[in-house]
Length: 435
Ligand code: HMG
Image (tube, rainbow, N blue to C red; front, side, top):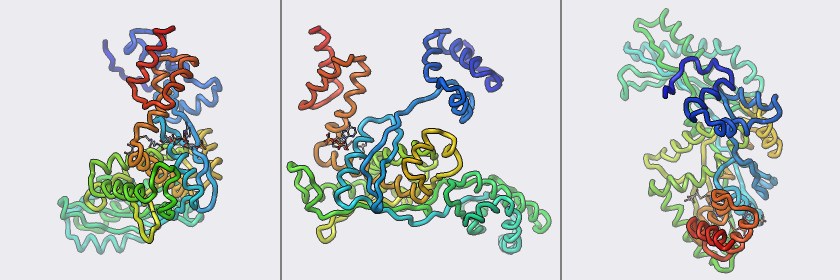
């Protein structure tokens, strides 16, 4: 079967589906039903989703949930989360409830600077290039005025442009390294438009001024934003750290710190530890229509900033006070992109009281910290499987197409019994044999 095609993008949606069904599913109509059953009956809404991306043939649903009881800087939040993994929302909710009565979460913005670069090659005299850059810099800013006008009115814009000599790494390689303040916009389009204009002006002016030519390789924002940083924290007296009589507060605090310390120095553990942080971060980022790929890339680069991949969270005990905090780079937007287009994204932002980008950074950082707290609490006390499987059991039941009566009986049986995939499957099979 030939599954290559030219001109696929020009086909209508139903032609695209017909082609997929013919080439990949042997014309099986059930595959078509699977694709079309997720279409929205509201044609306008469906069209909106079709047009978010290209070659759209269906909608891919993710559960949209909420985690209540978050107190951040004294304000109450119910945090929207879009994620496929069971126990994440329960864990966030449990951590929120736990910290609600211990002062809640405190969060602060440490910086909002974003970065973009024009990468170029120049093999001439370095001093001549530096002099040229200093002369042309005002024109670089002047030529972007039409792009920056509105952003400047709101208080943002281009912060600075530097010439960076990278010839130690690659012969002839230099950068225009620019910094930006994009306020409530994530700013990718704004930054990239400014950079492309810098590149054009720089190259044109260089042609008239420099003896050697400038060859622009590319102009693009950086998703590494170590100066667009937020910190979130929880703290309480060590004696208050356990709400479970079977868990000793001091022992728990010490084990918790050991777990964080291990993630700080051991990359194998740090990656999983940070995955737990990202459970919370990505879920809120998705629900609020932000770019989780950009955030993921930037966050993991930040986790490696000291030359070893390390924990994003840290913990201490000082004067019998337990403190747990996160410092994380987050370039987020609450205007532009999907924020005013996707109805659920709009709703999510409304639920968060239409936050500024800075407020959203704080909320997202808190979600990551809460998630990590819940995971570490489970890991250092009961083990992760107990709580995770308690939430995941429904997926196993659904996988075996258990009916409501079977679900009820199996859930009842596993109330006080350790849950594992095989034990649940065995229980379903036994039930079915009995009946
Ligand atoms: P529990 O103590 O059995 O829950 O915890 P509970 O039934 O006593 O309920 C206490 C509260 O938990 C509830 O309060 C909710 O806030 C929440 P209430 O609403 O009753 O006032 N909660 C729920 N929320 C919504 N739906 C539910 C629900 N159940 C409880 N069905 C829990 C159970 C799963 C919360 C706990 O065991 C836990 O926090 N576990 C950690 C789970 C976790 O981290 N999951 C992430 C996936 S595992 C992973 O990918 C990351 C990892 O590898 C990262 C790492 O290694 O660091 C672990």
